Length: 329
Image (cartoon, rainbow, N blue to C red; front, top):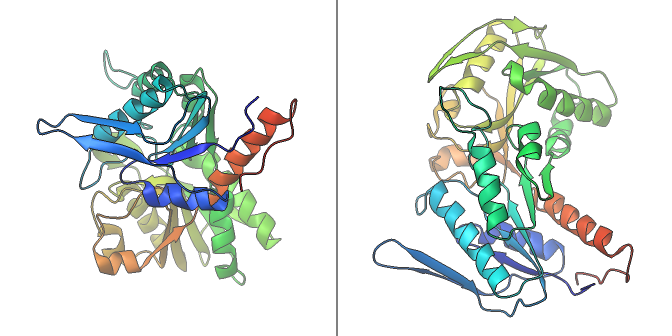
C-alpha cells in the first residue's frame, strides 16, 4: 500500500481554499497547467508526476465571473481524467459546493434527476471519492454515487461561531421551510450542547410554484427570542427573507441567518432588508456578487479544518490494516 502523502491540486478559482486545506495537513499544492483555446475549449494536466500516487483535487463548482458551473464541472472531470490517464492510483474530488444539488428529483413530466448524472460523469472520469459540504439532499447524494461520497456537516462549525453571541438570550432555531427541518434540528442540538441549556425549534411554511413562493404560517413560538434561521444555501435569499419577516411579525427580538453556501444571486438584497443582525456563510463560495459594504457585514466560517480532518481520517483508515500511516508533514 502506498503510504506517501497525496499530491494536492486546486483548479482555477479554488486555489485559496485548496491551499488552506493543504497547509492544515502540512502540504503545499502541486503544480498543474490549465490552458484555454481561442474557440473556448480547454485542456489541463498535472506537472508533477502522479503515477502510483494518491491525489486530491479541489474545485468548488459554482458559477463566477470567469467560469460557469458547467465550465468548472468539465474542468474538474477533465483534470481528474488526466490524473488517471497519467497513472494516479486514487483521485479524490473535493467540491465544497457541488453543483446541481437541487436537481435531486423529478418535478416535471419527463424531467431529469441531474444529481445522478453528475455522479455518473464523475465515476466515468475515474474519480474514486467525492467530498462535499452540506449537500441539498443528503439522501439523494448518498444514493446517486456508487463510489465513496462524503457529505460533511457544517452545523457544529456554525454553532461554535454563534455560541459566544447567544449567551444571555432565549434562542429559537428556525427552519425556513419544511424540507430543512432535519438540518436545522442538527444545528439546534449542536448549539444546545455548546450552550448547555435548552434551545427551542420552529418552522416557517413555504410552498414553491415555479419561481413563486407562498406560505406565511410560523409553527412555533419566537416572541422575545433570538431567532437563528438555518439553511443549506442562500440563492436569491427570498426564502430566508420571508421566514425572517414571519419571525419579526411574531415578535422575535433579534434575527440571525446562517447558511453554508452563499450564492447571493440577488446581490445585497438580504442586507438591504434590515431584517438580519448578522448573516453567516461558509467559505465554500466566494461572495463576489455582494458589493463591498455587504461583504464587510458578512461573517465567513472557515471549513478547511473540517475537510482536512476528513482527508486525514480517510488516509488513516486506508493504512490501518497495513503499514502505519505516513504523516502528511
